[in-house]
Image 1: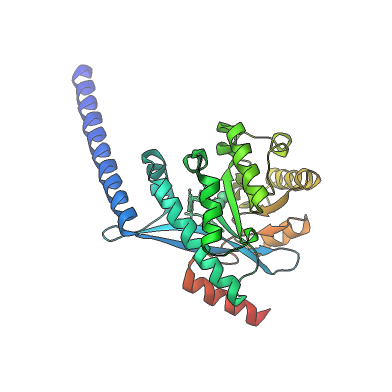
Image 2: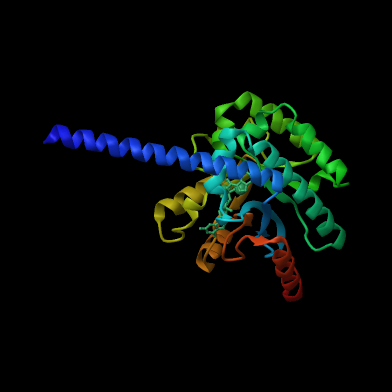
Length: 281
Ligand code: C2E
Ligand code: MG
Ligand code: MG
Ligand code: MG
């Protein structure tokens, strides 16, 4: 009867919960090993200046190469890394890798512009984040204009005072700051204006149906117009088609990023991509 069904549902629920927590434990253990064994790779996706069509920096995107599971995307392990605190040593590895890479790219003149690093809330909340950034630049003899830091709207809104202090110190150093996935959180442009932000990255949710969806057209136009009048540089994420690119360029979007230009690539392949660009420029 209904009662029995209920009991079975409950047992099923419990079994499912046990399975999930076991999976989570396995993932945590594997992630801990990954930190020790340095199983992480940093991939790069170019950013382009839309007016000139030139490469203007890149975004560093983390990948985990697990010996058994293969390549794992950050969406599948960043939340675990944040919850367990492993994001701290992982973030240090990313920062070090990016700085070393950027030093070599700047020395060879292969990449102009900044490499942007994604930073999560637990990293910013540590009092020594700014110092770690300063030391990494120093260690790799890099000027601050080699790096940008990307944070999400939700990070800013969760702890606005602390975020403001940290971003202020980052900006004072000469590292620029960007708000990632803009438009998907609960902030307003007026509020962001009081925070030390240089660049807004319009979330790809607003880009994917351009130029056909009239709501998305209105939203991106408004973000660009108001954002510019408040002094932000605007980057569009997730550009996949030439129509999206043409439209965004026509409404004055400053910078773009997306599969249309290039997917994120391992460092060596990104270098080949950059060389090819230089040939056709
Ligand atoms: P994000 O910072 O917003 O990065 C953009 C994501 O969109 C990347 O996913 C990128 O591969 C993807 N993307 C870029 N262009 C296109 C496009 O044209 N179409 C589509 N469909 N997707 C596109 P990815 O690499 O899987 O990274 C996911 C998220 O993981 C990032 O979102 C970021 O929030 C986080 N993440 C990545 N690397 C790091 C890191 O080193 N540290 C931290 N804390 N988070 C990171
Ligand atoms: Mg990002
Ligand atoms: Mg984003
Ligand atoms: Mg995102």
